[in-house]
Length: 339
Image (cartoon, rainbow, N blue to C red; front, side, top):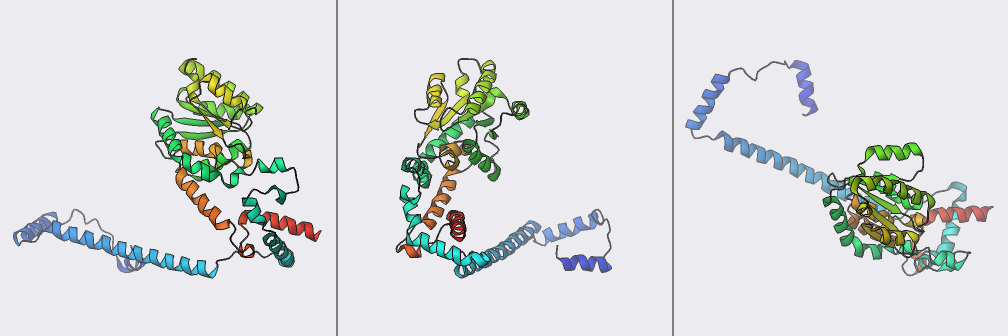
């Protein structure tokens, strides 16, 4: 209601119960209109159509204005500027040094010489840079698996993992809205008895799928949690079929992968081995729980691919912007230079 209408009502309006007043007269008027060949339904339908169109046109105009303003802002602020006061010159020097030595490009090429450390420790930890190229091909299979779990009647998904295996899924759980037809995702990355009991109280073991998540396959806390919940599931579904309530997410050749095969887990997802746990959110470690909760992982990976394209180096190297995730390194480099 327009504010002017409210202002006018407060000034001279009167509230009255008029809904039931003059009902007989109104009926006679409507009957006279029908005799005269005037269709109230046609009139009200037209009013409704015209009203909806007026609102839609106005809304479209607002959206066009927003898009035009967005385009103007992007054109005006196409480059990120960071101001660090008296240290700005040092940061600009560090950024220029990064560009001159093509640090970003060498990172994308997985060049271990960027870091002064053991080459083996670096080269087998940079898979996160290109993991989306691998995972996009797995989207149909992961989506199909999520529907399989949903259709099998599972109402809860409990992720058993510590540190890097659980932090990414926890962020996704809080960030994206769960679709009501998909299981509820619960992340259990604690050995605190009260926390474990709270999870037990919240689920039905027979209708819960447990994700046993460990890169090494030997994480002690995760192994203990698995054994505990396996002992809960057995009485609920029977010893023979208990393994179907469990899924392993691990690297190939780990003890967990072997356990999954021997115990009859519903599925074992073997992750690319060159990804550290803390960088694994867009690998199976993050995408499996996200898919099971109904998150559109295809769009998630597509947007990450767009971000990756935005920060990949172009030629010549000096025109390549330093990506946002590299700025902390720049600041640290500047601090070291200053000291």
